[in-house]
Amino acid sequence: MTAAALPGVGASAGTRWALLLGNFAIGCGVMVVPGALNDLARDLAVPVSTAGQIITVAAWAMAVSAPLLAALLSRFDRRWLLTVSLAWFAAGHALSAAMPSLAALLPVRAATVVAGAVFTPAAAAVVGALALPHKRGEAITFIFLGWSLASVLGVPMANYVSETVGWRTAFAIVSALAAAAALGTWLHTPAGLRPSATTLRDLAGVLARPDLMVIVAVTALSATGQFALFGYMAPYFHHVLHASPAEASGLFLWFGLFGLAGSVWMTRWIDRLGAGRAASIGLAAMAMSLLCWPWATGVASMALVLTPWALGCFSSNSAQQARLAAAAPALAAVLVSLNSSAMYVGQGIGAAAGGLLLDSLGYASLAPAAAAGMLFAVSLSLWAVRRERGRPPAR
Image (cartoon, rainbow, N blue to C red; front, side, top):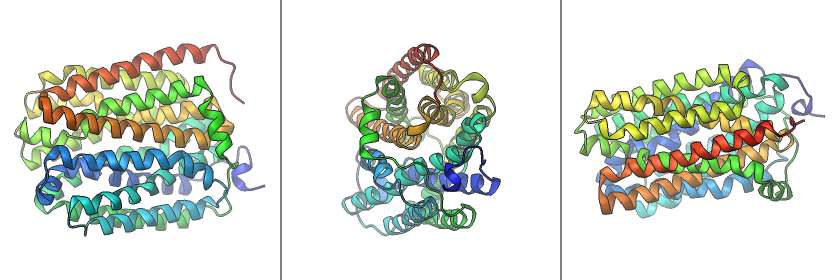
């Protein structure tokens, strides 16, 4: 029996921090495109809405690969799997930085982000398997702080570096971060970790359970609403608010700081509130920001409007992961990967829809569409909470 199969062993601090760093690198890589979108469009000589389809292509690649790879690679030693995925992510970003056109960049980007679809659910499954049962939610949300840190540092870095030096340099920085994370994961993740193997049959079984798929649908709707606007936030700041590169980077930094604060709060309170209620609170905070968006007419007012969104953004996603792991612990690996897939599906749909709206109706149409998706996600989440109260505790 491997260490991951022993109940109550507990994840070491080194393992938790290594996986947090890995999620930080993955988060920076996933969000480097929204932050660098202005310079990408300029350098590759395409409209912003066309450049935004890089987000769509990458999101769909991750969506399709996440649940399939979780099943196909589930028997591999997690130390090797996590390290190789980060090394692939590093190599892919280095190669992306050398691409001369959008047509050349798209397939490289799609192949690169598949590594993120492998790493994030595998990391959550490892720390969830190692954690003490009553600390599982806290352990999973802790390693997802890496995504919040990526929003604090990664998106502002990508925006500022791309506007002052170029998007290729921003991609090269992500490559270096992923390489460092690969080394840290190899050094601090115990060998021989093999959580319970999952199969395509497990995936089919999960897809057939309405109670679980409702929770997954909440994630998809939330991501759709967010990325209809978030995917084009850098151009919005530039063209609508007329923000300078420093001001735009400052807004992304503000967003990231409150995103980190929301994740820290979630880590401390999720096991007391329950994952379903905690996720619903985060979703409602995001909906509040999107409804108030028309009143953000300058940099200062935009910072205020962004705050609730930031508080709920990453914290609600980590709560969703913990919510699914608690609903069916034996299927945690499949559920986390499926939830990640739903998030990427939502990102792809949201970015594509946002691009269409931007071309046809302009920037003013993005926030109402985003708010509609988010309100639907809040309603569905609250309905699921009521259903969860009547379900026996998972074993």
